[in-house]
Image (tube, rainbow, N blue to C red):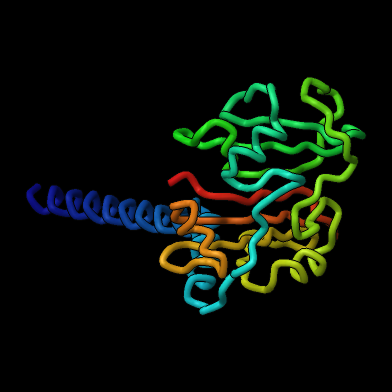
Length: 217
């Protein structure tokens, strides 16, 4: 009788060990199949790290659109007038043909009419709430405008950019200046800001949106 019990217990233990091995194997397989959740952020971080360590210097950034100069209250007031900011402390303006939209961001703590970030993109025609400008094409001081090719953008701003996102028909060019580095005009030092950035999104060969300015300190 004792021998029969021993045989039964041995068979039971061997069966359980087999089940445990099966569970461990399936768990390992499932882990291998799970995609990396932060891959996009990791690639962006790596691109920025390569830009920081490249020794390349972005010295001539855009600092104005139409007559508005970055963080210059006088030019901001002349352009904005009596317009009120919308959500997120943004002023918005349509081009004369309603095809382009200019957004001006005022950081919390900025003085009145001080604009720290400029954004330009194609407008959604179903919404005409914003003031209309007297120009059809919204351009920066360096002539950057929607529809430009990558080559045109790079010819004006240089090769010191990181490709934060890139596919067959899309690329985002990202330029950055951060202390202690600065521009030839001492842009960061003059405005007491730590970081200037500029992003240019190009799809199917044409610039579809761009923004530039100072990160919130």
